[in-house]
Image (cartoon, rainbow, N blue to C red; front, side):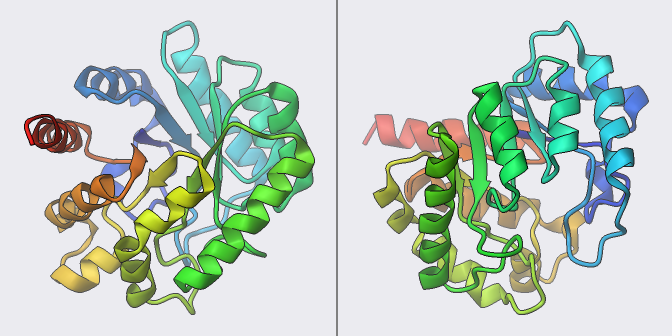
Length: 251
């Protein structure tokens, strides 16, 4: 899953793609091996500059107009039903909801569209489950919400990352170390660790310098059951995946 970031407010400025370059970026990402393009028009990093929902809608529309008619598998990263509704006028294959279906209206849009959903472990706000125990509680909660809405095709996102001020790097390391326990729910698991702050705290690197750390953690999470990798750096991540798969095949 390649990150197609159309939000200039992003925590990692190197990932921002202006609308005029979206088609070129999408082509490069898919040619490098990305199977899904996860399009986000709003930064959800802590302390990021908020934008109106109407602006997020317009950014998504402009982006999808550029990609319209092409054979891409597109995921829409949003918490807002208005944004997903606008996107569904185009060819959209997945929804990515970091709010864990907190908004039932968004859940109804997903269910009515009949598309799969990436759902993040969330109790009341994105990333508010800090410990592994709280993450499991949040997963059971979001699965209950999904069931009540009739959403069955789910990819679980345990929510690694500093989403709330009370979350620490140690919380993220605990999720990584115990990642395999999430397999008990019987759904594919998303690993979304690309260039995140807990890697920076370990390596002393800014987002620009966190690729090596990202790849190291990603390789471990694949071994612990990750089925979908959300990445900024497609060629390097694909090389990593091929290497891990080759090790498995030749073991």
